[in-house]
Image (cartoon, rainbow, N blue to C red):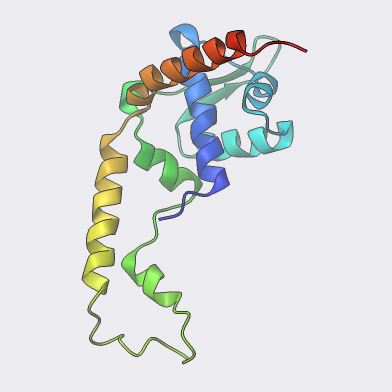
Length: 155
């Protein structure tokens, strides 16, 4: 399975919204800055997440984006499906890279069941993992980065 940049940064945008106290609004500009991505890219991701019903936007001076559900109610599976998808075994097999027009094992494949099982496992994992489960780990990462910055001598 390959996680696309769109899926990764879309998830990162959602984590930024989930970290915001009491589900308040966060601006696209703030999210883009925190994630080191362009404003246009952050807007594109948030628009797709909005179409999927994961975020809500509000225009105006106090506007921005917020989650439509609690972080514990949004799964990684919902995010991946909103921004891309996990490749199905059929899609994996369609990307045959051999020298023939199609895979010679199409009717009797010894590994297709492995791809199907792996795909099911990945989808189950994504559907059982919520944004809320990622937040404590993010705090630990933030703490480790802050500690590392304190230890590095400034030039």
